[in-house]
Length: 264
Figure 1: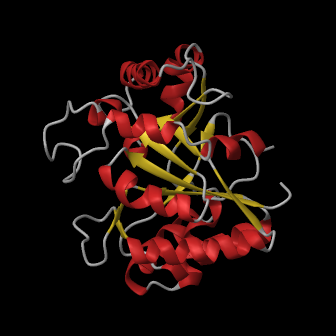
Figure 2 (figure 1 turned 90 degrees about the vertical axis):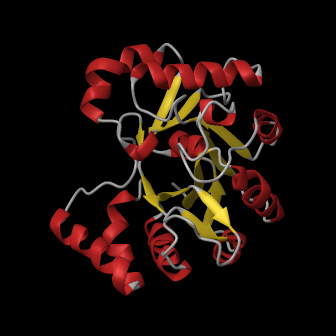
Figure 3 (figure 1 turned 90 degrees about the horizontal axis):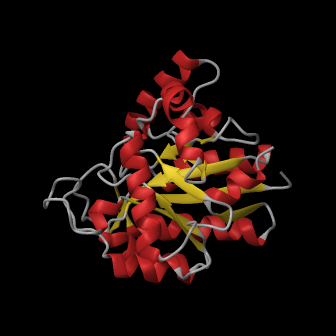
């Protein structure tokens, strides 16, 4: 890759993705990927069953889908990783949006809870999912080397919040080549500082690699209700830092599908 590629990948289809995150993304002209749990946005979950907050409506999803900077991807129908649920989620979502594919290159899927087993996919799912034009599967972090050290670094960084520890913990999650259909992502929890995230971003810039940041909710300051809530002031600060680097030609903000297309 000529430069680092950075993606915000939002899971579930939570209402604040539309009311808070989306206007900020538009303000910064920042592409992103919204991974939609189809049954959730269709109102078929009981309150609090998936998350404490409400979902986007399907009309909101349809509106966002019309924005060429936003990728819509699947996240299951009932937020699980069974073959049936993956297919039902994507097929129903395509039907609601009135399209044959969620993008011109095919359909993306973010594994709920990042729980999809790669061996199970290869053995029991691959052929069936090719029939629905599944292009990539986004998982969570990966460790290719120094697994014990990186695990200890993750645990220590949750307490100390030292940027170099965060970089060490997640460096293996950066990508520059294909691993079959899999993309890897760094989970962004409410406790993570902007400096920590920028440490791994700067590593991606230096190595000219791709980085997918997995988020769930953007909430108002001091309104954190679960570990997946990220406060809006930190999100804005992060976007300011990233757009400055983009303006300098050091990285490009994009979608998960675009990252998959650009991997070797």
